[in-house]
Image (tube, rainbow, N blue to C red):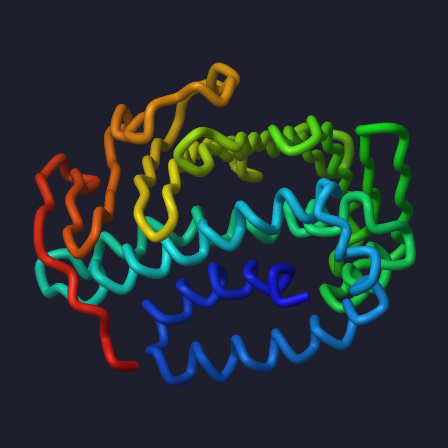
Length: 259
């Protein structure tokens, strides 16, 4: 079930920037312990590599590795430390899509996992390649996440809160790895778009604030397609490049931090 825990690696990137590596690792360890216990009942089902859950967790594995490398590099470089904060939304996007890690694993697995996150009144529906999870969050808001899975090729999700669509996500497997995008509308109406392309430990992340819902992906995008965003960061080997929020070019050699 380690694949299902990669969401917390991404989420802990935020804590790494804001509170320091040691505290972030402690928090991540506690979260992993809790989710491991909650997910044990889904382990056997999760071994089926044809499930939407297995497809999405494979994407999440690569995403967490690439985001960790880029964020580690940006936050440890004095000239780019503030740019690491741009990844707050990119990491928190995983929280909205957490139920997708259990698509295809059955209602018990979904309910048990979401209960650890504080969700109540969880219902799960699966019909062919269509999945729907409905639940109340800790504040009583009703959230719904629906997903359409094309076996081994793509997972497209739409999320809503209290009946208002607020999240749109796509993931495609490609010849080089994965491409994806996440579009969300905050409570104040501000829209954010995060676009991803991953090839093993290398990849590109694009960040755009404002604008309409993007055109759909098709899986034939180039490995550098997120570079069309106003702000983007890429890692290839030990080199990080990009353009920050102020439009300034970024380029430096990355040395992983010890902690």
